[in-house]
Image (tube, rainbow over the protein chains, first blue to last red):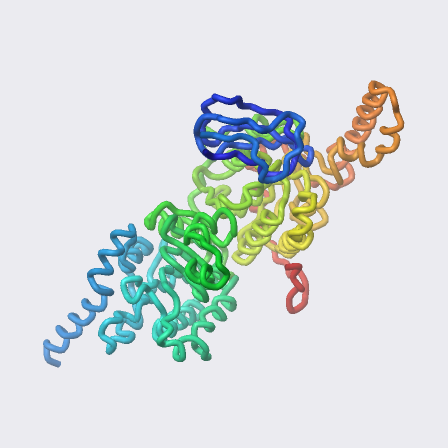
Length: 70
Length: 512
């Protein structure tokens, strides 16, 4: 299982995937807001989404797990 | 002279040129590695012309050329000096003649004022020979001393094919660029075995000092190549941007328009200040087709650094990448920028800053990592650069991010802006919160509060209106996006004759 982690500290403003979705490497899965910017977070690997931990409005730190992919 | 003598000599030459024992050549194949002399054939335009020290340590019998080839040849018609480890000879380790040969080719490159390329694949010092090769005046330390002395004088390029261990790891560290072959190249001070014995850490070589790690995390590697051929081609492409030494202007190539499929600049840059876009699209739309050579592509990706051509002429690009981490500057991105600016400035390559930056990152993590001194390092490198430098405010430049991207106060030859650009201490949302925080809190009715905020943001927008900034001579020109490429070409032509001494002194006290 591979995990997609936040690449910087910020607030989750959009979750673009659901459990069961097939995603490709490089696809945006979550959008954070940080430093007043929209910061898309991409999956590094392709796979099936097995867990979505991020909820809109959550504050996340760099390195926090947002989505798990199998 | 009898024919016999010549025949004997030719046999001996052929023997040395074969390198180490056949079993080590087999090992090269297993590792997807090329023999040192085959690497040199790929690197040079043709066969190389001059080689010294072929018979180094020949009396030892089993140490052909003492494990290093030092040669002179041509790359794109330009004379270059090369030292290349031979890993079939005692794993490319260094004995006293190995070190002497490396020092001599450095001295040759210095006298001839031509680039020096290090093809590194070495297990490090031969401990049995340490007295002769390690501590003395012409011991290995001299190699690093020379590298430091040559830095900025002639281009120094490193391709790392295999290990570069312990002290040897400083050969790449002092070069202008380090190209690493994925899976095979590594750099480390202490091996995984040493790490386990001395500090109890269990780690693989790849994790500890592998090519990918260095190109993505540590920043010690600049280019990650899939194989040796790609690494050598990459070095050739890199050299094509550089003059033989700092006194000469960089070579000009045939001018090409941008790639036909490039998007219109106005379609690339969103009006919404907060939305992400891919800065690579803008670079593609500006530069000659296929000319962009990215440096540290995988490291601190919120900032893009690379060489390219505008109308055939080399330019060094420093661009914020809003697609990654909002284009915010971090410790690593500031470090990456400082190094790249210094590289271009040393070899007369003009600089282009493409600014779209919300500022430097804030918060505990970056403060503890010393973002202020790393930011200072970037700003001082940028300030000190005396090559033609142009700053383009693509969409926004806030706070110290504005300064770091070569804004007006840092004497760029021009500070240009695209229409829609915003320049300010901070963006409207943050500014209104900062200035009116107490007032906003005091308004109880949510609707009233919102309309107050919106009104203040509008006022703020008017204060930082681009035409107001142009009217106050803060930006030198506002450029229609579709004219930007031509504008840059025209300006670099004009600024070509620029000669400037930044400051009369020995050297600055560097922030880092």
